[in-house]
Image (cartoon, rainbow, N blue to C red; front, side):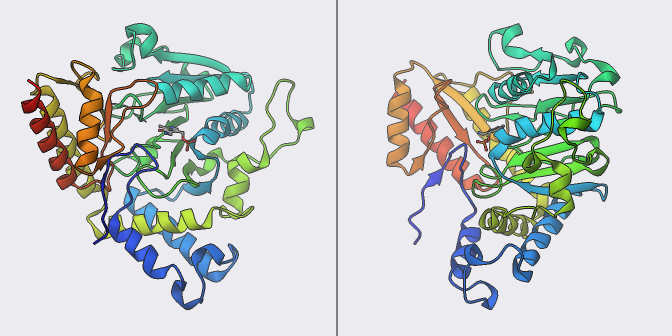
Length: 379
Ligand code: PMP
């Protein structure tokens, strides 16, 4: 009826069909306002309800404790690379304090480079590409070079979208040091203990909704009053107002016009997830989806998954096909079967199947069946 494809895109990515249908049914006349959500004032009561319901539903999905704020920001995950540096150094009150970066893939690498560019005292805890030649594993914590309690924060990317490297658990760091994580590509995919973190952030366009909004979950004690240049010691960073967590928190993400439609869509996804068993259920299904796919790869002679067992992502499954010219043929055959956007990131090549929450187990089954069929034809 919808003529939909199986969309394995890394992001913007598939949104649950039921959510798109709900949005479609409300498009022209939202809640008897006679207009669409896109046309509503962000200060209206109706939008206020959309915002507060989205926050309440995200809070129940992730069991977010009372001492955290949820912010809806703009500028994507990339803007948070900068915002984290400004806000956490301001919270530390020491502009030259070391900031610790775990580099496990290209997104954490970019984040560390931005921190350096902004003048922060960056300490690389590890860089798995430098130590092993590729982003395919995470070194044991015994080899990490943490700065200890002096650090303004420890930063890591929970799931590296391009390389398909996911942390198996939350790293152990000094409990007095704020822990910051980029969960852009795995937020809500598995259970997480929010109380371990100072900041969790995620662009919505992978595991939640459309692009344009970034979810930020920040511990309240880190919200620091905005300072002016004269109040900052030499070499310090003055936080741009729109990147300031406290400004956004004090104004319930309505300091300026927020991305209203993206917030509305995200809220629909949160509600849909609660109606479908919540994060516990998604964790179970995601584990099953990923193991089916990795098993199909490991049990074959032509497919190979580069990431070490134990660090393989449940969300982004990169693999190669040997001999490599088969990859183009594989993609063509996939398209003919309505399986699209399977091409690996331009920086690494190969194939990447992104199997976020919205990709059903039947979609993964279809991909596995095609992989077996393709292998049988090319042995
Ligand atoms: N972090 C991760 C883990 C990502 O996958 C991405 C985008 N692919 C980003 C950050 C950057 O996000 P954006 O494009 O929203 O700035």
